[in-house]
Image (tube, rainbow, N blue to C red; front, side, top):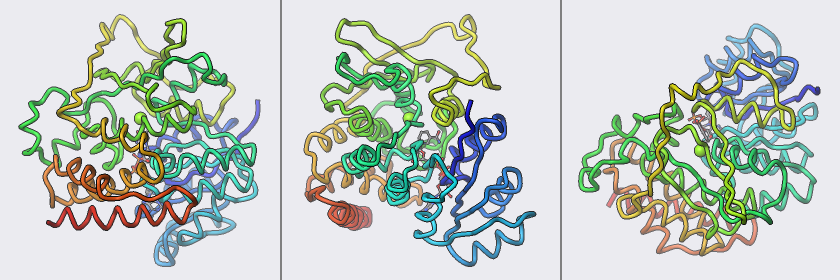
Length: 384
Ligand code: NAD
Ligand code: MG
């Protein structure tokens, strides 16, 4: 039974808050030694006062000043800026870094943590979508692990039990289908921000909630799975499962399928990643089978939700195509949330940007350049 010292990047978000609860419930197993927050200083201070991490990171001096007025203890250090996140992720007393920053802001801290010899618990799927090959190679080079927190990948990780994918025929990602699962395609143009933010089964941050409504979330997860488990994209399938109880499945070459199930509460995969390879008796509620009644499965509507095919195409193209898809999607989602574009424009913009941009994944600079260019194109398209 060992205590894990964890740096939590994105403590104020949906995943970050669930992770704080796990740490509070398992004080003998998980100690939060560092935390970052971006906008919500009152919430960061509240968590920090409870868990007393040695170090904190915030975006700038103004946020630091605000945070200091709210802290009731003196941390060893408060880092600022993007460099501060890198310093936090490399903090000496940490064994593991839980990356729960939305978007690609988690990439540099993830690479820095691996280089400093930390294991990663990864919630931020955008990190692997943008730079999967590089991140996995960095982990291998430093002999570090990437433990998936995303519920689907955590499920697959549990089904594989640390074995490689030699005996695997397919990985099957489950998807709730989002709020528009059974809507007629032509009604999607009139979708409001509020309707798109009403997820049927999960409570999450805004960006991933919109991604779940377009099914880009599942598209990003296909690419994430491709890198995490080193499986060709042609062997990754998606099935709609509206109840979100089966979190994903592994089909082996003999036709046997293993699935992982639990309530749709991110504390399950977070706890598993933070305490792996142990299983800890905790406070999480088990499933009550007779109350569940039934579990449904259906084919995704690929024609109504083009995100899945777009993600598959990007993965097949390789190079910087996945980074381009991810960047264009981030911009389009922000434009939709700001009320400037209609819902279907999200995938129309992503498709157009993907068509018009190339780029290699030769190194980090090349990826960042492809990302920057894709963002620019997506912004132009959103305003046209
Ligand atoms: P969220 O919006 O609730 O929280 C995001 C966190 O990132 C906040 O702490 C915020 O302060 C921080 N942040 C935002 N922009 C930042 C920046 N530029 N620099 C540094 N920090 C920044 O998001 P979330 O729902 O917690 O999701 C976080 C990540 O986890 C996403 O990548 C998402 O895809 C992934 N994920 C979330 C869930 C979920 O249930 N919420 C499930 C699976 C995967
Ligand atoms: Mg997921």
